[in-house]
Length: 566
Image 1: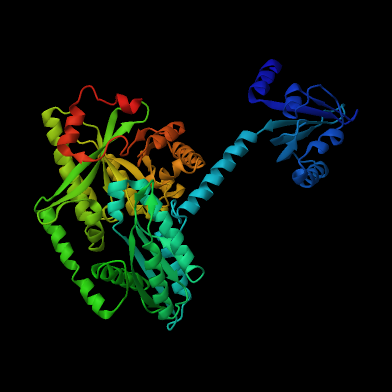
Image 2: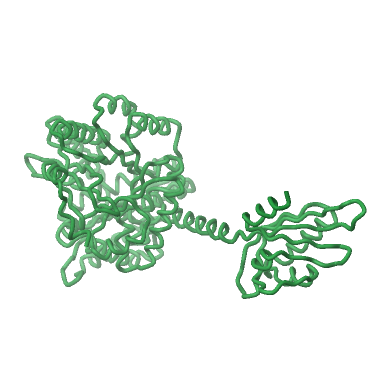
């Protein structure tokens, strides 16, 4: 039995000590000496050595607790830090008990366990969670607050306002920003966004709080509405500053800005009205020629109502099969084989040509049509997979973006079940995931029902501010996708890789696969090699392509990826 006990102690890496009250001597085993960094064995009184090696910040409380246990004759159970002989710090979990044997002096027997690694892991997780909490309310590229932060601050402000108190919201949108992205790439676009954010902060100063609320959209909240002439002066200065020439890697990437603003009042008014009105004023400014500003007026409100025509156009596009899908391949992070694809909607408009999502999805969202578009895309991919199966084309899992509005649709499960076939292999990417911080019973039921139908669940934009640790734990996704906004800074910020590694570790704790999107350069590809991930996606690998081209890629027996692998 003694040998078994000794083996168990050695396996647990516990240090064992014993204090003999009759002799006043303490004996430490070899593991105790190792924990404290002592090379030579020694026998000393506890107060001669133990107290002198307690961390100064833990000394008083730990000694007081030991005295309390001695007086009350209770077990000693406590974590504390020690200073080793070499100056290193260790976290110790200590347990001690007084043992009384009839006819013999009492003894104090205890064990020390080095739990430093556990503490460091916990500190790292807490640090990552604090960072994610911050990121959930801030834009990674510009450092400004995001849409969630704006909504929360506005609601807090609104609840403090009186009926006659006024505040102001300014909504800004960059003109011709898409051209910069399309011609010079997203890195040039990010350069422009960062410059605009800097100009915005410089002009607004302490008068208001600035936010990045969309791809190329910004907002300013003035908690106490300045005189309108002050707002006009700020608009004029912003229009001028944002139109200043910008250059990225020798290429001109100048843009301009359009601004709309509106004033809001406290209860009983609706706080969402001011955002709707500022948005309507913004689009009036853009329609007036861009690179300007516009205050909200009643006439603008009436004109905004005409935008409902867009709803009819999009509904017609769905009915007439004008929506199609392009597919962006996804690659195994280790072998670079094609292991998936993301379905990206396009509108083959008879009047305007082939439109990318940014040309019509904002209108669809304002019109409340995202659920209809999501359902249409699902049907397109379902039909495509049936065609692949009938043609003998080996196809991977296809990911589809799914909006919060679609996920909350009452007919979601029935409509998906109606089109699913045994051959289907699909994964739903949950967009607008900030709402998942408070996952209600209905959404939890739907997620489980979707899994029962054979669909995978992905959490999109992980770490970008649109999701959180709470969402990760609530949704339990099969895969998380780290957003491209966290990939773009890799070239200029070498510490960014640590953020990606922290996100990956957190995802692994929930047993989720990890995808990284937005890879556009060789530098980014090289940097993420040290990140524990499974799937890669981005322009440096393959751009989105029509269904026929994606089919050809899938049928290629010898995928020509040698250059990428090199």
